[in-house]
Length: 360
Image 1: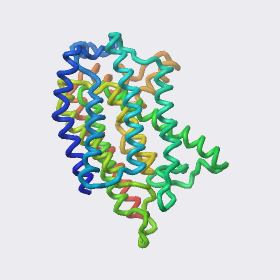
Image 2: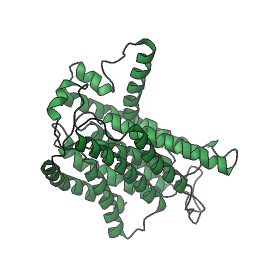
Image 3: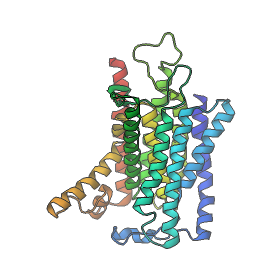
Image 4: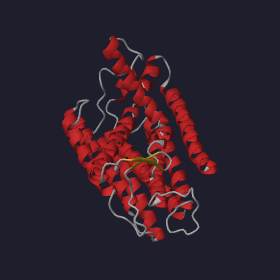
C-alpha cells in the first residue's frame, strides 16, 4: 500500500511542477495546436495553445512508478512492465501523430495506414507477451478467457492453444484500439479527457488493492472468491501513478487550458486503460467503469451510422460534448457535468465489483 501512495504522490508532483517547464519549452519551439475548421467556432481562440502534453503524463507516470519501486524495494513485475510498455508504445505513436500535425500545420497527422500499423505492432507485441512469463503458480499476466469481474467460462482457446493465442491477440487489440480511440474522442474540451481519466484510473487503484487483499496467489487459506490476477498490487501502483500524473496535469489542462495532452496523451491513456482491464481480468467491467468514454464513442458511431442511412443527423455535432457546445452550454459546464457522469459510472462499476464478491 505504501508503494501505491508513493507512486501516486510522486507522479502528481512531477506532473504539477514539470508541466509549466514543458509549456515554456513548447512555446519557444512554437509547437501549438492546429484547430479544425469544421469544429465549433469557439475553439478557434485555442489555436497555438501548446500540445503534446501527454509527454508529461507519460514521464510522470514512469518516474512515479519507478520512484515507488526504488523507495519500497519492490521488484518490477511482468504485469506492470507490460501495461507501461503498452502505454508508452501507444504514446510514441500519438507523439508522431502530434508532431506531424504541428510541423505541417494541419489537423491530420499520421496517415490512417501508419497509425494502424503503429498501434498494431504495439498491441500485438503486448498481447503475445501477456501470455508469457508464468510465475511460481504458473499464472501468466493475461489469460485466454474473456473476463468480466474475473475470468468467465468463455475461453478463446477452446479450439486449441494456437487458435486461442490468435483469438486472444485479436480480442486484446480490439480492446486496445477501442479504448485508445475512446479517450482520443473524449479529448475535445479543456480538462475533459484528463478529468475522466483521473476518475477511471482511480477506480482501478481501488480494484487492484482489493484484488491484492483477496488474491489466490500463494495463500493456502484463499477463499473461493479470490482473484486470479497475477500481480494486482503492482497494477494498482501503475494505476496510482497514472492517476497522480493526471491530477498534476489537470491543474494546467483545466479551462482555460495552458496545454493540451494531444494524441500523445490520449492514445497512451487509452492503451493503459486497456492493459489494466486485460491484466486485472476486468475487461467487460471496464466498459462500465469507463462508461463516459463509451458514451462518447457511441455518440460518434450513432451519428455516422444514422447519417449514412438517412442523410440526417441525430446530434448537432459528434462527439457528444460538441453537441452540447452547439446547444449553448458553456465549456466548463459540459466538462464538470461529464465528470459527474463519469463518477457515477465509476460508482456503479466499483459497486458491481464489490457486490459480486459479497454475493459470492
